[in-house]
Length: 372
Ligand code: ATP
Image 1 (cartoon, rainbow, N blue to C red):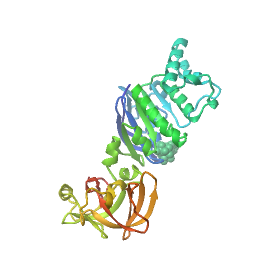
Image 2 (spheres, rainbow, N blue to C red):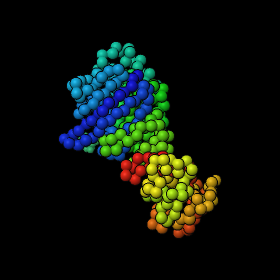
Image 3 (tube, rainbow, N blue to C red):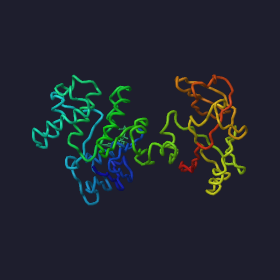
Image 4 (cartoon, protein in one colour):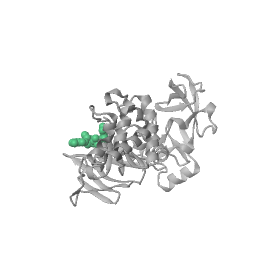
């Protein structure tokens, strides 16, 4: 096992800054997810750790070992980094049996026949592949193939697993199951893992920590709870969560409200204090709140009429069975609420909603950084 450390890493491809000044430390045994939209630089980051790309600038450590240093010209090739990669395409050898596919990395390293046999059977047992060892990849389901690819990665007992969207070729149901299996396996093995995905649910459910990237820049690193409940900026707030966080432009009034023109909400005393201290009194800010933090007033515990209760028009109700996604409007301001299935709101109605002021976020309008 080992920690993985990136220090001031840049990757520039013909003028395209794919990764910009990235500092990231993955702890020993940790499951770190790199999350972000397409093109944000997560795959490039993983390939740099693997040694499939050289950084333009910066240093990479795996354990104590310096594996890349652009300034000093140090570059250790992938095969000497003691890592194993799992890709989206499983890249199994079609003519080989499951047994031989898993055994392959050990054969390359000239491990004895007996030890290969022991290790392959151990891994097959762990992954529930024992009955399938004689089959060829084409005789397996997608999930089984993915498990063989994992088996091939773990059989060598590497220091670090690097995974690039390994579940994205599976159907939705299987993906959910493999998500849990993979997480359990990683816990059992305790191997430091860097996992790339654009799927926020995968990131939130699997990661010990999540590193959110956008345009090659690391936006925030934190536990799933931290990135969800304390987003560092507007991008992270809007990227994580479904439906995403709502944002409204508002003004902090001298009497402790945030005003949106069509309505206003009373800020809590410590929020007023923080905004005053930081010089936001009377200023325009961005107000963020998650759909689940605005309630149908009939189901709300904390109603303070005139302070956090607002009359809104219901535009659309999407009934998902377990919850209702409700598109709401006040004047020309629109936002989304997530109501319980018992909510009786109907399209076209006017209803009262309640904002949970403890859960709101305020961002600087220009820098888009979170104030709280
Ligand atoms: P995706 O989820 O779509 O794979 P990503 O977040 O993994 O996206 P990267 O593949 O790391 O993003 O790409 C980051 C940026 O670098 C993109 O703008 C991409 O076009 C560019 N890029 C990646 N590889 C190369 C390359 N070999 N040559 C030139 N540009 C590249």
